[in-house]
Figure 1 (cartoon, rainbow, N blue to C red):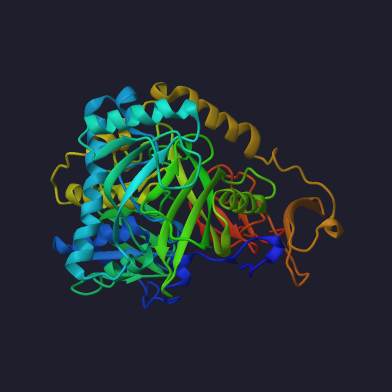
Figure 2: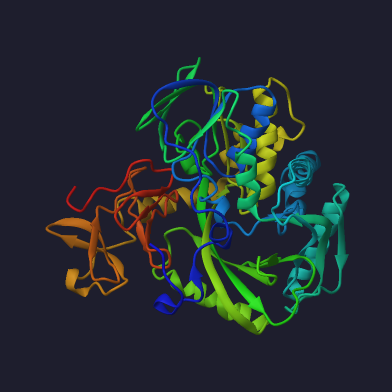
Length: 513
């Protein structure tokens, strides 16, 4: 459900700038029945589309399946920074993994910038691609040393890093690490153009085709959907979170996180660059041509675990208050939110799904840096499918995970899931239907059964069984987006229970179902 400007006192129009400024409809039909292909790619965001393009260029017949519309999921809600500077990561990678894996991560993400640039140049993609410096700045004296250490670590890995005392952003700063020659773009314009290269010569895209199951018997694989099956030599799960997550226990190895963005207008030019703070709650800034000759500034942050907070609308208000503390805003034009997954050691999982499932590949856990990590994933997976090796694969290998290496975070995450979310201890039913106000959602007991109830602005009541169809956690109401969000693994459902974000593939049942 969309909120208009000012709904519930929230700033701006509810919608991603990227999707609001591109065609609402794409031309791809649902899967019409059963078919065979070389590679089935599940997921129509930056990882899936880039992988499909690279594989087709390598001579494979590729079938891309998207549960909704391509480019309208996580990729359509990003801040779209194309950079290898991922807040603070390189000092930590060197300390925990060693120099060689840290080097691989650095090279993979730096190369991804050039992959995107080469696509833009080769195909003449009009997507506002622009080279910009990227900056991680210290907001406190305590963070200054971390930022200086990050600059040293990044330089030691060959990255274009420097430490600077001052930044052009009028936020409080005690020094920053800056990477030159990074980039930004309009991700949906970029990917819609890439997607147009996929159909033909045996390759195709099917939208509104949700993958329900992968059958992997060690030979050919089958992806089952509601309207047919796709049989392939290889399957790539590019769904942001792998819905086929039991092999490899991915449900126990990542946690979901939501963050927020505002598209605002200023009365002064925005400084050259992309900016994010080093420590504490994230504050992210970048500019974007608005298409009317003006400039939109995208302010992001206020992350929290998916499904945790009671009233998520306050995050938009807090983000607006923060933005106004830095700049006098002429207007707030857009608001949207995004979901990301964070692995237990902070590095994505890219590669074969698990032992015994070598024909199924995954890319997940991008930790809010999906533009470069997703592009790197497409390169790595394409080379693996072609039978070659990739110099960056080691650091991302899904089987690198050893619980002892990240024991504390692994245990905390899974104890929280077991104690707080499975069975719904965190959402104890309270009140009755008459207590649910317009625009409010809550968990109630109705006729002896737990119900997730929402009353819309027309007074209609929407009631579902709030038990997530993935692994049985109880979803919480997200008041900002008017969705039911699972705090365990990040599945999201609309007010009537329809799946809008996996890993769940089945809708919530109507109340009493």
